[in-house]
Image 1 (spheres, rainbow, N blue to C red):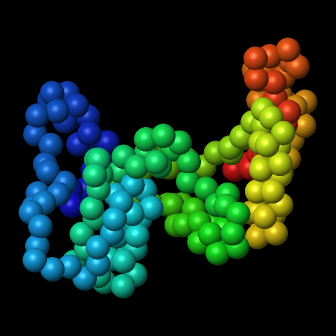
Image 2: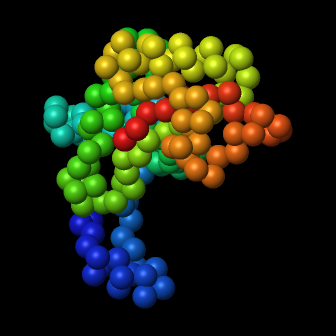
Length: 178
């Protein structure tokens, strides 16, 4: 794999992006693999990486219907979190979140990982009940999560419109701080 540096990135950028080396030069399928991972988003790529790093399993196929790294993590939410209902899921994803720390330096490749909080707004009674259920499940599993009143949500995010006359009034929010 190519090692990147600020100098190499600038030279490629100013050179019209013409001579970038292929990152995966041989994409032809092999007759057999030791592991096959379905999904080439953040979690699938992470699984492939740690199979190689921790267990030496490098004969791995990552199957992706779209583009590599373009799953939910890279496309829709850009959120990697441990915000799940079931004990097993919370522990698994909490561990996965910890694996992202320092990964850019380890790979010498910008994974564009940045620790940030997340706030999900509740606009109806179902949202309130569902988010509170998630918060309680997360807290039982040691995941930092809290319920915010509309006023607390506004303090967290000052541009937020908490007017009761808004088209979709904010009834509260589930928040996890980084």
